[in-house]
Length: 256
Image (tube, rainbow, N blue to C red; front, top):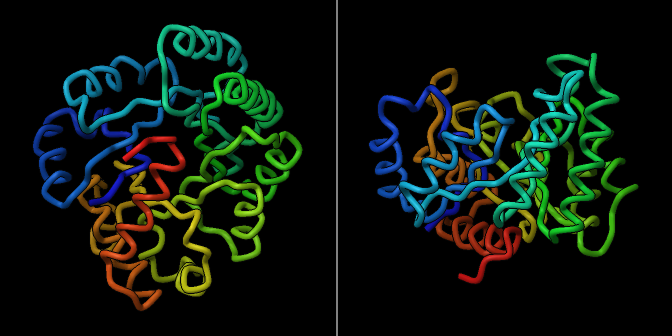
């Protein structure tokens, strides 16, 4: 069995065939799909999937850095309202992004700190986005770290030194389709990783693994990610599935 720790399966790209997508995921052995929120526009679709597939789909609540604009306080107010309404397993997707637009980076940092405070208050892990901003975001977490703060740096494509910093914080790293990309450099990092803090993800519908690169990603492709990691570490894929499942349950504080 595998746990998909990061998939936006409520996205418009899945509108026509979500039932088939989820069935393919089950057939590949996926037992849980965690769905990180983006902003107020994604909440209804995410909640609908959780309601329809309560045994499989799990919603989280947060504000994505690419949705942090001049009016981000309004977005955060809606997120805070939802956190007060019901329980969520994690705060996210949150973080920083220097790839698309650097205009609101100060606001992103402020939104990051506010959501970390909520994570501490509710004792929930955080799901961190850090595209082109990994060192900066590790620095932020190191500044804000307390004993009850944990989480995952999703879509990790950094160095072994960066992975070690994350591990020392007690955080996890999410590995997805990027591990299959020829020039990602992950072929040198993965064999040396401490697997105690690694979880699997697809980031569907984005970043599909080879041989589907450039096409829509989906949770069933998680098996390809696991297989690539197994090949790089020269172990059986079942070992990777077992380790990452235990890690995902620990990250989200789930008793298997």
